[in-house]
Image (cartoon, rainbow, N blue to C red):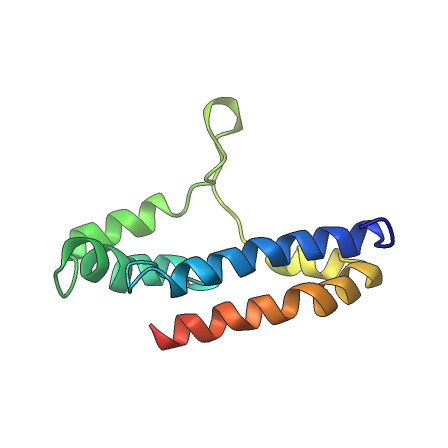
Length: 122
């Protein structure tokens, strides 16, 4: 760890978290689900809540609408920080410096790809 710069250390740490998630999903006998954050609401509405947790084919329109409504609020916004959620992934990606991008490609990309493949196979 002493030879890694901050970006490499952070990316390697995130990779260990992703690797652990992948290992746990594989060892869960179908109980663990891998979900890409980019598809979280869609996955909640059409798969996780109805099929995985409730054992039904689909949610009512009312339930779907409620999930979509609730998902529009910033998850960390409680009390004085309460706010409407706004997509900022592209802004964060655009502001990433080259060392961060390089470290992510080197250390984190393989773990991410494994999680993506696991999601496809569920």
